[in-house]
Structure formats: C-alpha cells, structure tokens
Image 1: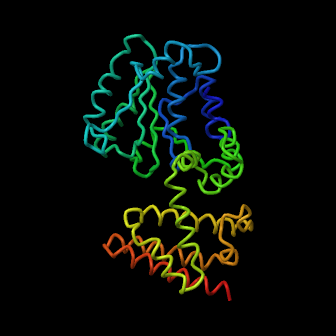
Image 2: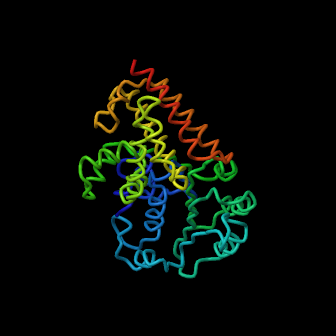
Image 3: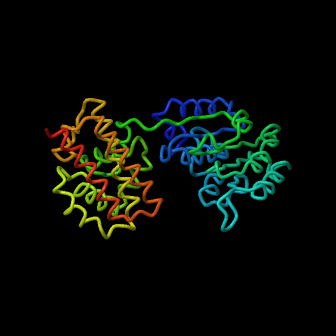
Length: 325
C-alpha cells in the first residue's frame, strides 16, 4: 500500500503525505493516539516510503529497498527495542544505533530510526536521544510512536512534529471490515464496539474467546432484572475467576457503548442490548460504571470473585428496578 493510500481518511496523515511528496518532511515525527488507530502501520509505511528508490507513488513494494525492508534486512532502518527480559528501552539500547547514525551512511542513502512504544524509553534514554534530535545528521529521520504522549519528555516532543491520530470514523471502519469479507451485521457490531480503533476491531474479529465471554456477560450482568435473578447468574460466573478481568472489561465496554448511543439518541439501533435495558437512563448507567470500578478495586484487594461479582449484580438489579418502575 502506498503512503497516500495509507493516509486516506485522515487529514493529519494526508498532510504528512503532502510533506513527503513536496520533499519537506520534518526530520522527526511523534505519532500519538489511542491503541489500534494505525500509528505503527503508518510509521512503517512512511519509513518504507522514505527509503524507496522508485519513481512515482511510494513505497512501490518492488524495488530492492522495499524488498529488503519487507524482509527485515534493510541496513538503513533501525528499531530500538528492550534487551532480552527487559521492558524498557534503556540507554544502551539506543547508544549503539545513535553512534552509527553519527557516521556517514555506507551507501549514502537515507536512514530511518523507528521507535515503536516510545513510552518505554527511560528519561535517561530519552535524554540520550535528545542531542541527536537537536543535531540530526543529513538524511536521517526519526519516527516515534506511542499511546502515551505524556510519557515522552517535553524536550523530545518539542523537537518532533507531533501527529495526533484520531479514532477512525465509523463509516471507514465499517467499509474496511466489509471489504475484508466480514458480514454486514458483524461489521456493524464491531464498528460499535471498537471505539474508533480498527486494530481493536480486527483483534476482536479473530478472538473467539472474546465472543464467548461477551455472551457470558450478556447472560449474567446484562440479564439481571431483579434481585431474584442474581443467584442463577452467580452460578454461571462462580468458576470464572481467571477470566474476571476480561469479563469486567467487556461489561465496561458495553456500558460505554450504550451511554454513547443514548447520548446520540440512537438507543441501540442494531438491537445489541437486552430489552430491559432500553429504558435505562445515563445516570443509572454511570452508577453501574462506578460499581464496576469498585468491583475491579476489590479484586486488587483479593476480595473473592464470586462474592464480588454477586455484589455487582445486586447493584445492577437495584438500578434496573428503578428504570422498570
């Protein structure tokens, strides 16, 4: 896919493409945004385009440089990563690369350093990077990618062109999913659930366990109408301690979706929610969200899962009674 095609649908990314086409690329970019909005993909396509040797639309995918990039054998692209068994990008992970960048390229071509998960750089390693960013050698480009912009030092951010990539428009997600052969109904469901993240949508699509757990959430937490329903629902959850975090995460996701739909006055137009939830109001749903948060906090305090889940469902039943009166 060319850089222009990859940028389609985003004004910010189209601006980068225009800078590339006009030969006015900045020497350093910081791509930020929520997980799954395409930051890493775009940074890789941009790196490949910078190195591409073909004329016309880039990257071409056919020249020697593109083929080396795709096979991960290109000598002019660098990906600093944590050393074995470490979770941070330390000074030593950067220093050798930066020393090499300070010397002239053997073939005289451009060089690109791509730092995915840039928030993993320690303050010391970010300061190590700073001097090279301030005095970048000719033909060297830095592409930093992070979900956590605030973890990047202000001195680093000020020397990069910061590109904040927004969540995808629902129509674009829906079109992308249907183009991949996803059924219209499942594509609509994923579009509503993924919160603007195409990456999350694709991950959910391929995760059968997610759909099994979501169905369990709907049979339990979302199926409680009154206190008398709680014991039966609790039985379905009692052996799910190992899946508790994911079940609560899915429940939070469902609540956010329904609150969003109420705010947009769409009221579950695709019929994803149980009938008894159609009369729910935002205030009640927000109180249930608070109860889910407390449930997660209790889990950190080692409160038993069965009792914790039962207490949460009692709270849901209490709220459900209000909107069914």
